[in-house]
Amino acid sequence: MSRILTIWNILILTAVGAIGYYFYSNHQTLMGENEKLTAELVELESQWTQLRHEEGEIAFARQELAHVTKSTNSLRPEILDLGQAITEKQADIEFLEEKISSRFFQYRKQLRKEAKGMSFDEIKTPQGKMYYDVRIIEIRPDGISFGHGAEGTLGLAGLGLHEIPDKWIERFMYTEEELEWARGWTSSDGTETVHGKFKSYDEETGVVIILVGDRKRSLNIDNLSTANRDWLENKVKGGDAKEAANFALLDKQVIGSKIKKGVLSKLDGNYFYDFTMRNVPDYYVVYYSASW
Amino acid sequence: MKSFNEKIATNDKVEFIHYSLDRTTEAALKWAKKESFPWAHVLVDKHEESGLKKYAKRFVPYYMLVDKDGQILAEGHQAVFAMVDDL
Image (cartoon, each protein chain N blue to C red):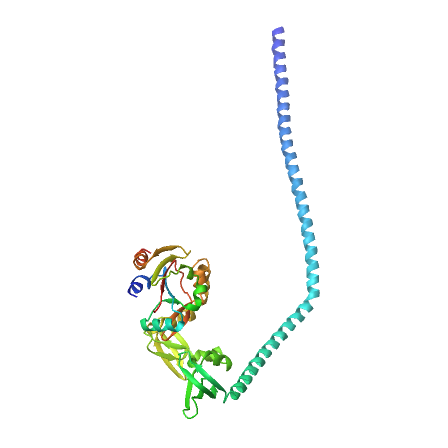
């Protein structure tokens, strides 16, 4: 009997222990979950605070925007007025430019008219030809005619645009557009030069069209001087941008930076012309020499 | 002229420059026309600006190969054109 009671007690104690362990284990699990939830809650609170902060910023930005919009609206009439004023000023500038241009040509007409009879001791053409005791007869858009020589040996002469001395170009106010008609087109061997205004260049065929008076003339780029080919390359092949890029590279050189422009000359038929470097060499062969 | 045409005219890495020691542009022009010089010249009025005066010798003709940084690489016709061959 007492053994039965002992077994019964053991069973009861075991059951109590199991129940106690069950509650302890459950408690631990709940504690863990509680901590996790607490952490999530803290995180949510933090996010909430952040959202409130951002909400405040948005509200402030809205307020600022409203303020700016209000200011802009109040400035709108002024902006319109300014736009109107700019348009009017541009029209004024265009009007003044036209007026200046008109005055320029009026003044030039008068100046050229008054030049008739003007005398010069001597003049020298760019080709090197000298005339003495010169008296102007007429200044025309395409040239100048004059008498020269002492009385008794008076001669008459006419200079085309390409023959007019620089000091007369300045004095009688020839424009760059007019002087385009005087552009010289020289054969590659330098033996022949024709003067005319550039009209077009076909890169595929190499044909250059120039205007000589009211006539068109075709030239082949392969038969033209280096100076003409350089000019065409610059004019037609977007040489300005290429030149700027090359200049930037040449500016980094000790040698190239000094000679890239305005220092070198090249022969073109009977003259030297200002040669601008078109490439960026790494080396220079310099030849010191003289004709003597 | 032959060396120029064969070795420099078609070489974009090298530029040939004639530093004219003629005292006038007219004299330089006369010579250039006579010989049909195809290269670029530094004429008398541009000596200072060119930065090349400092390399000039007391005799002519004088050839010099100089790199873009101003370092002399070769002097004398033979040495210069021999080196140009390798450029």
